[in-house]
Figure 1 (cartoon, helix red, strand yellow):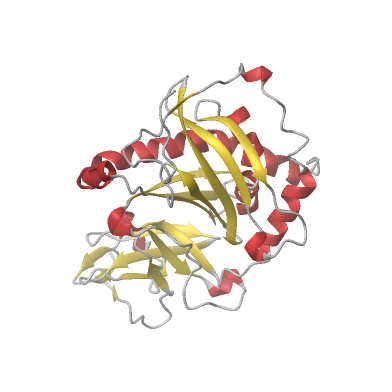
Figure 2 (cartoon, helix red, strand yellow):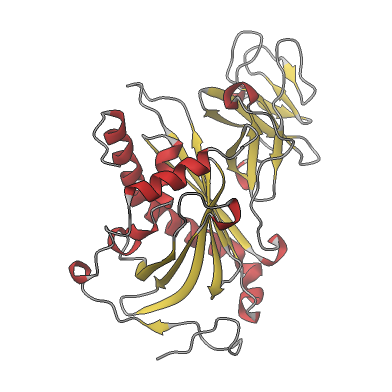
Length: 339
C-alpha cells in the first residue's frame, strides 16, 4: 500500500492508496441514508440565509480590459467591464438611448462606447442609466441586483474563507442547465450519490456526518470521507465538508488529507428563461487548490497548465450533475417530485 499523508505523517509521503472497490452494482446502497426530508431541510435552511442581493456573474479572468462581458442574471441584462486601473464595474446591459446591447460596446479609456450611436457611459452612470454595485474577490466577479434579490442589501457578497490565493491555483468552470438554483444546491446537498453517479471520480464514499433539523449555522454541514480516483485502482483519500454560506452557494472544503484547505465553491446563478419559458441556471464553480507540499509550491508557476485540467474535471462532473438538477426541476415543476 502506498503511503498517505494527512499532515501528521511525513510531508514527502505520497498521498495515494490502492483502492479496494466492489463492482458498481455491489456497492452498499445509500438510499436509506439519503433521506429526502433531510436534504429538503438542509436546502430550506440554506435558502433562509441572506445573500444581500449578490449574484456571481463570472470568473474574474473572464472579464478583461479589452472588451465588456455580458450575461443576463435573473432576467436582468448586465454588462461588466474594467476601467484602466483594473477595477470591475457593472451596469444595465441596454444602452439608455435606443437599447443597443452594451455587451457589444467598445471600451475606450475605461468607458463603454455604444456601437450604435457612440454614447459614452462609465462607472459614474448617466441619464436613465445607473450602474450596479460590483465586486471582484480575486476569483469571481459579483454583481448586486437589489430589484431582483429583494433582500436587505449587503455591502459585500458572502464569500467563503479560502486559502491564500498567492499560494493556490484557482480556476472557474461554467455550465448551464434548465433548472432553478435550488436544484443545483440540492444536488450538492446530496453527497450520497457520489460513488453511484460518479464512479469514474469517487470511490469508497461515506457520509460521516449529516446535519439534522434544528442544527445551528455552525453545525449545519455534511462531512464526507471519499477517495478521488486517479485510476481504476489508485485514489487519494480525503475528508471534506459541505456547507451553504448563502442561498445559492455550496462550499466543499477539504479538511483532512491531501490538499487540506482547498475549496470548491458551487454557485448557482439564475439566468433568463429559455424560448419555452423554462428557467435556466448557470453553475459557476470555482476550484481553489492548495497544498503545503513543496512540490505543489514549485508547480505554481505552471498554473496555466493546471487550470484547463481543473476545468475539465469540473465540467465532466457537471455534465452528470446538471442532468440530476434538470430531472429534479422537471419533476418538481410537474408535481411529481417524491421529495
